[in-house]
Amino acid sequence: MELGMIGLGRMGANMARRLTQAGHTVIGYTRQPQKAEALVQEGAIARGVTSFVELVDALTKPRIIWLMLPAATVNATLHTLMPLLNTDDIVVDGGNSYYIDDIRRAAQLKIKGIEYIDCGTSGGIWGAERGYCLMIGGKVRAVKRLDPIFAAWLPVWQPHRVRPVVSLWSEQLSRAICIVGLTVRDTLSKWFTTALSMVLWQPMPKG
Image 1: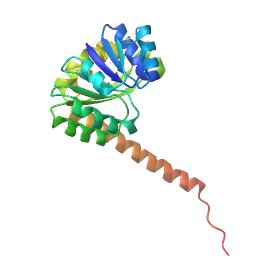
Image 2: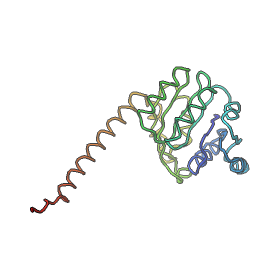
Image 3: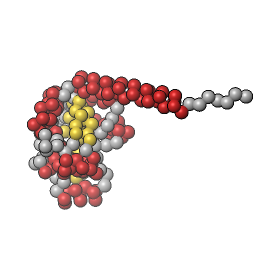
C-alpha cells in the first residue's frame, strides 16, 4: 500500500522504516530537504517532499495520509491539508489528541467525504524493532482499508491475537473507552489529591 507520512521525527521515521520493510510505499513530508534526502538514500521512504501540495500530488487516489505530529499542531495542519484532499481520502492522527478534538475533526472532514481515523500510537524509538501499540477509532470501512498498514506495525510476537481486534474497532467503541478511561483517571486523581491533602494539612496556630 501507499501512505503519506507527515512528521518524520524519531518515531515517525521509524514507523516509515517499518512500513517500507513490510513492502509498503511511504512518501514522507518534512520541511528539511536534507532530512528527506537522507531518508530516501537510506531506503526508509520512497520519496521525500517539502510541501503539502507536493505530498498530495504524489499519492495515488484515494489517498492515505498519516499525521505523526504533536497534538498542538494537528489543527493547523488539517486546516492547510483539508482543501487539497478529495472524497474517500483518509487522514489518520497518530498522535495523542484529546478525543473531543478527534470527534470534531471527524465531523468537519466528513462534510467533504474525507474519512478521519484517530489512532493513538505507542512504542517510542523502540517500535521500529518491537512494533507499536495502536488505539484505533474510526468507521469500520475506513479501518479495514488500513488493515495491511496496521499489521505492519503490530508486535511480531502476537499478530494473530491483535489483528482481528483492529478490524472491529468502531468510532463509538473507541470513544466509549476514552470516556471511561478519562473518568477513571479523573476519579483516582481526585481521591489521591484528597488523601494527600489530609496527610499534609496542619491546623494554623491560634493567636
